[in-house]
Image (cartoon, rainbow, N blue to C red; front, side, top):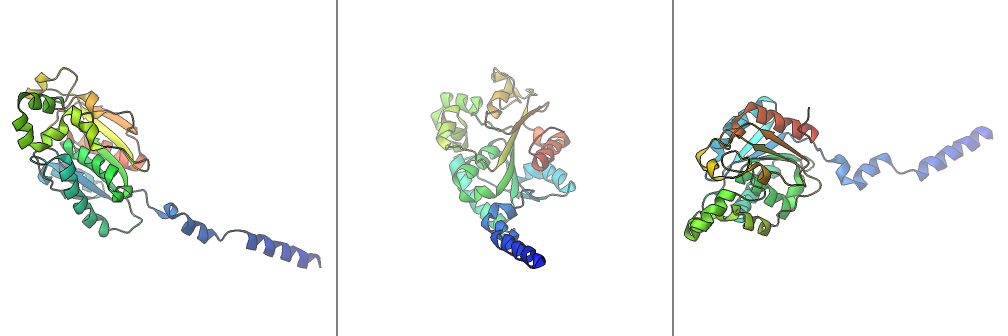
Length: 249
């Protein structure tokens, strides 16, 4: 009788417990792979995907698959470029398992396109990590100067209009909590236009403009705007952040 009672007690206990496999179904996030194997690379103002080739090669040598996109980042506003980017991302994500996240890396204005996508498109929830390299998150002082000189200039080169400091707030950038975002700034201000900037800069973008408080991590490297995304040290920081959510070793 004692053995029978113990058996009945165990049966009642097991029936009262949730099925462990049911728990995974009840919480879809449980099955999402937060370690992306695909990294989407986004070029900056007046460039194309070829400008991200060096970084692509360095990341692929580390075992990642990279996707380089071409966006209209000269005569179009950031919002319009982001629409094009969203269509590109629909194609990229459709080829991956639904539980697989991706990472994104943007140079300069490409970083703003990424942030706009994360803020305004539902598929942004599938981006686990993003790294912004020399991105003018607080706006570009040089773009502001261009607007002061000529309205026609920034109206023609509409991407510049999006980069003016007073325009950044109108983009509605609101980073999602589920995406870890890090930023890398350069402080080698040896480019000609960098002489017009008053604060520490990479020759195009001031260091303080790359940083904003909601970042998960921030780093500064001794490179200028045109070279920073071609450097092995930058690629190493990108990999570290994607794998650990931090630039620290």
